[in-house]
Image 1 (tube, rainbow, N blue to C red):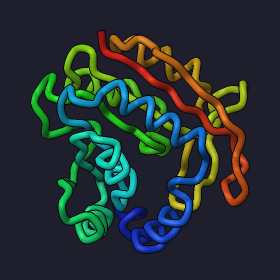
Image 2: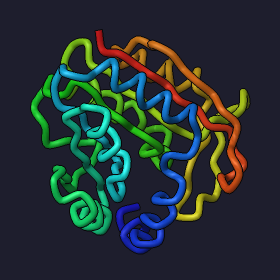
Image 3: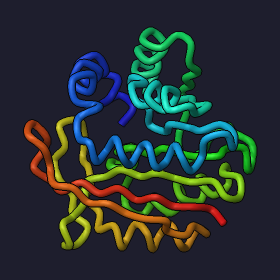
Length: 201
């Protein structure tokens, strides 16, 4: 996956620059997440890509930094937002102390994760979040159907039932705060979108 995103980093950055602030429901989800974590400590944008949402979280008053597995994406993020912190790293093994984060944004950053590995990601989120910390997860949603695989433009991706994702998160100690669904907007892949807000007790 690293090589796949390195290869399309410039094109991807141009694409998200045009659409990143698109839907008002997405902006509402980011704002609600910000209200939950503001003033409580650092917030990690995991799978930050070229850093557009990291910058938006900072504009909402959060101490946000970005992590991405793609060195090319991190290079673009640093160039676009030189005042922000960006690091190359894996969500499966974050170089962060236990209980050091107030929040985690995982916005379409687990869509390529093989289903058998998702528990490990939630376990790492649990490890790095302080008690009371929150996760906001964005993904393609299966529309009430089963977990499905589809041919993403970059590499294989998955549509998840939010119930199933919430259950996996619960196994790792999270409680669900809320969820949201929305239909795709013009120009988006014709798949339902899901958002899941979680809290570590």
